[in-house]
Length: 135
Image (cartoon, rainbow, N blue to C red):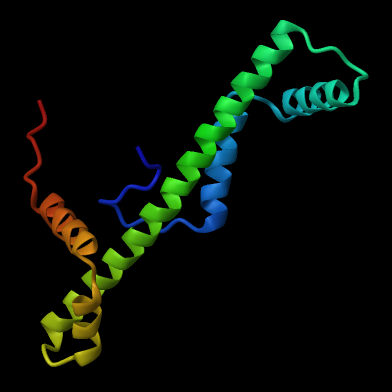
């Protein structure tokens, strides 16, 4: 699941995505714990430290966490690009409502991929969903 809400209108910068993925790592490993682990790995590579089974397990866990964070970041970048395109299409559609002959707005809509148009439709459907009554 992406950290980008495709039905929302929040725009995430590269820095925002990086901060979120960093937070994913920090939720599992503090900066100090990462530094210590890096020193152990470096020492082991240089032959100055012998990794214990616990150290090796910690390295594997760190690799899993950072791999998951990297994958989440990559997906977020793809999703943010698609959301940005959908927001541009929505703005163009709104412009066409006000000025049906606006060729630039029409060009934006015409250039949209089927995936972006599907997202625009899903976003529109989500906006018209009736809210459930409060209990």
